[in-house]
Image (tube, one colour):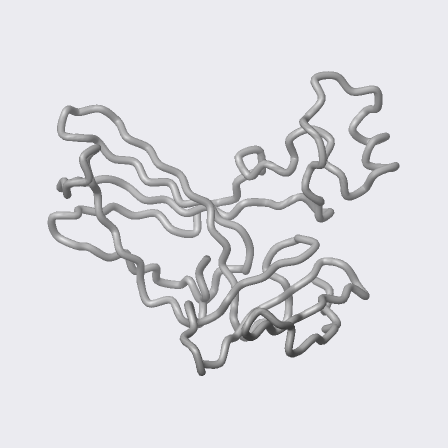
Length: 193
């Protein structure tokens, strides 16, 4: 996950199957993903191989349940590339994304294409969320979105957790545990997307 307000760059490297560094050149493309309009709850059972209801009938009766594979990011429509560039790990070890502060919050896919030293094509894809830690809206259309801001905390440090919800009127129970006992319990109202 990438906080637009704090992002300065990402490391880039390539390793062989033994975990040893290998120089490589290739292309990087980042595309936005178009999420489903409705938030979907996790599937409670395996995907059926046959359906009794059409997709529209199913969603009319169960608006937040998964019908087929619409919860899989690999099935989501991809938008126009927000970044496209090349890399050479022999010359650089970081990726700077100019203009990331202007990208809409949401889910993105990073596509890296290169060739190994034997000439075989290598392609890797990873999805990630772009969000604003100071934002007022949930970056993704989920029932509950959460992110621990600032990384890992040490004893005595203040922890900051970002929460968001796609439903109006939703509440979250926040509990603080110390020495295996709940020392604080508080219900927090969530702001809708």
